Image (cartoon, rainbow, N blue to C red; front, side, top):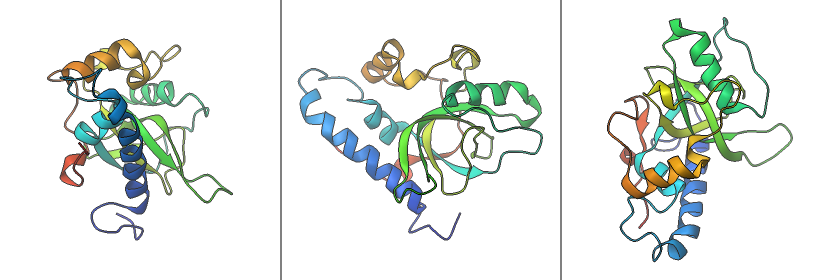
Length: 186
């Protein structure tokens, strides 16, 4: 971990968790009557309950930085193009420090993870970044390299998961489970 850390989370991770908690709390009061009985009220709630934290690591020398704005396909491409690295596609929310901006950008994001729980990001630099998401063990769920989009942003998949919870075997056991660090609100 870095010297930014306070407690068990880095400063960037604490800020990302606070952002997700604020977003979850903003939705939850209005969502309760509609989603009574659902496993989670929003993607933010899902990530705070089931998400995993990943420690940022540098892009390996054999991999190259890919085009900004295509993080989901970039992450799947990195994992598919480098099977020797044993990477798994992950997505959720990321936090990146943008040059010249005092506050980190918190946004839906995709990256690849190692079995050791390291985030390998072909889109963003790793310095000052934070990653909270789900590593998808089922390769058929990974975005197509040309047409891929976020699973957690797509209503058919997202609504099923929010209603019923995560299917068994969908998420790989990589990263640090968020529930060990924070309790979801509600």
